[in-house]
Amino acid sequence: MGKVIKWLLRAVISLLVIVILAVGYLLVAMDPNDLKPEIKAAAANQGLELSLDGNLSWQFLPQIGVVAEKVEFTHRTVASGKIGSLRLSVSWTELFNIDPTSGFSSNQIPVGSIAISDATILLAELVPNTSPIQLKHFNAKVNDFSLTGDRFSVEASAQIFSGIDLDIEAVLALQLDTKTGLIKEFSVSELEASIDGMELSGQFNTENNFSTAQGSLRSNRFDLKQLIKTIGMSFPPVKLPEMASKDALTAVSWNSSFNTDMKGLSTFNTQLDIDNQVLSIASKVDHSINNLYMRVSGEQFDMSHYLTPDSNSSEQNGALFAPLAVPFALWLGRSQMELSLGKLKLPDFDADNIYINLFGNQKVLRLSSFNSDIFGGQANATGRLDMRSNTPSFNLQTSLSNIDLQVALPAMADSSDISGLLSLEAAIQSAGNNSDAIIQGLRGGGEITIVDPAYAAINAEEMFCNAAALLGSGDSKNSWPKGTQFDTLTGNYQLAEGKLLFSDMKTATGNITIAARGSVKLAEQRYSLIADTRVNGTTTSASGCSVNKRLQNRSLPFVCTGSFEQNGTTSCKPDEKLIRDLLKGSVYQQLGEQLFKTPVTTDGDKEQQSDPLKSVLKGIFEKNLQ
Image (cartoon, rainbow, N blue to C red):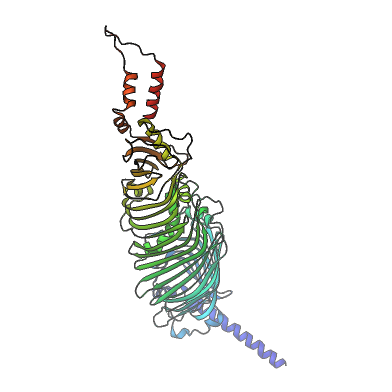
């Protein structure tokens, strides 16, 4: 037993002597600064340029390694920066596998762990013409580092943007091709990352120098509004408009899986949860022909929470939809997006069963299909949006069928005076960077039909009878129902210079036929209309007023003006010139001339008029001719 103990003691002592001799050899025979050429050469093989201006020194505990200070590096496609302290170390057992007699090379130097302290790293631009991301106070620690495919752990922390803390923990595996130096396989597992309240987890692996990849990533539920606000402190263009709901975008999460092949087909599947509203996003990229396909689907999305409280802030509201166009604007090949949504809720109305099919090619978007159930009817459209110039332009072909105006107008124009079922065909075009320019530049036209139209602001039959009473028609009834029910209305319209121009508008009510023309100022939501009325018969209707022969089968025009705004004023008056012409030679005209004739005395002085009957009749004429 004593011999065994003595043998063990001698073995331990011998091992310590060997270690001491090895350390002494390293201290005496090798200066770590002599390794600078080999370190730079190894980095250059990976496309990395190193500047080692600081001193290199040995470290012996707990592992043997080299500590480098004041390291600068540049990689043209990844990052650049400065490192305050870089420590490369290896276990003692790995050290004894080195044959010092054969010399050192960049492929022979083993590294067991890497530690980076107080670094500043500038990442390359992920998207052309965007600001790069800077990592400040970057610290990282890699344990059991390996280039042969063995797993090793990584811990890193940094500050990005305006002092946002970023923390990452993961287990990695990295295998290099010994001949080319390219990454043969790289995997990340047990990934845990956090950034300003957003936490990410997942795993993925890539092969053949990132040409293929598979994996999944998911997030916790985080406040996207706060994250964007914090990022916007460093990037002023990143700013969200004020939204109707204070809770909008405060509970966002996502879960994504992907399988990519840069020489073939790549697929991405994401479940995006926005404030408990789930959207499914499926994407495919065919790299061989540079095609992008994306499908977005969901049961319901309440957009009213995300619009601005100011109903006139259409440009800010439009900014919320801009991300939908980003893949098409940036994708250099052909693209297609399908959107399928069961219900879209807006502040004043809902759109159901929405389907959109959109194609893109070099910043030109083509809408091949748009369908939706809206306002009790259906909307369909095709069109084209050209974003290649500084002033985007579009053309649109649309059709509406059976749109309930009693529901649509209060939601779209704050008006509830008109009802009926609207159908129309339209082909329009415009260009501009804001809603005012687009409205002013609208061109095009189409046909319009309204079934069972009604106008609550006036009673057209009462209006006609009041005017006809001037021409000797019979008495009309004392009370009239509110508004007018018309027969089916048909007509044409044109868009030009910010106006909607109507022509060949035809309808009827009772025995009165109406042919109208007019215009609507779109920005002001005001209209003017000339309606030619004609009575076919002796009365305006079965319960209306009688009409003398002079007005039967003859046009009597009315001029109507008003506003589509809530509580807007409306005015309809008979054409004054025509009324005066019709009164010529009538009993009313002769009576009026006699009543209003001013007698003249023989001495030329005007006789003063004092008959009270004359004043009353004058008031009647003035009232009816206003």
